[in-house]
Length: 248
Ligand SMILES: C[S@@+](CC[C@H](N)C(=O)[O-])C[C@H]1O[C@@H](n2cnc3c(N)ncnc32)[C@H](O)[C@@H]1O
Image: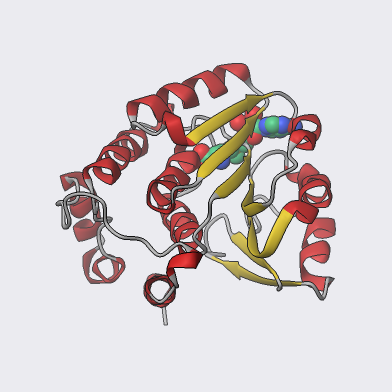
């Protein structure tokens, strides 16, 4: 089975799981117009991948709110200058899907950059009724991210905290449903140690760049040897994403 087929299978399985969630776990009722057509470029790009791409399918907006967010994601995808070391579209889709599947109310991201990954979270959170708190060291990037969140109509879902996240994450006290690490790679272990106690049982820790650039072995050891955690490594022919479940 090739990567796109594996990804398609994973996404299908996860969305089936999500569909089976009880309302308490955050199952989603579409709020506005169902079956809003995907923006043309998404469809075209998938079509351009031929048969394999078609298996993954276009991103379809289920409401005008989603369409609004997808339009800004599309703009950012099309213009490299509006992204800085951002996750791939495939990574973003996975993160959105997992976030929505666990019915996340509170997502913490370390490494905002210009907000591309944050918008994938916003897509999920617009359905779950949750919020994202995202940390960025660089004030200019943080400002650009804020503009992108506003353009997407998602600024009400996102709080951007500027500063060194090794310090600023200490202000979190509330339970976290999804923690996403995508800042300084050698800092992942410190972020994990500081924030894992707040991740709720059944919550997820996602970490980017498990393959490219190489992951910090101390972080990999921490997420693969703790019996309270279960970790899978996905999309490893790209940058690679680890998905760690904090067991109940
Ligand atoms: C790979 S980029 C994040 C990409 C973003 N998650 C996306 O996909 O759109 C990493 C970001 O982490 C930020 N960063 C690095 N060290 C940091 C630190 N100690 N605290 C907060 N942010 C940091 C960098 O300034 C950079 O913008």
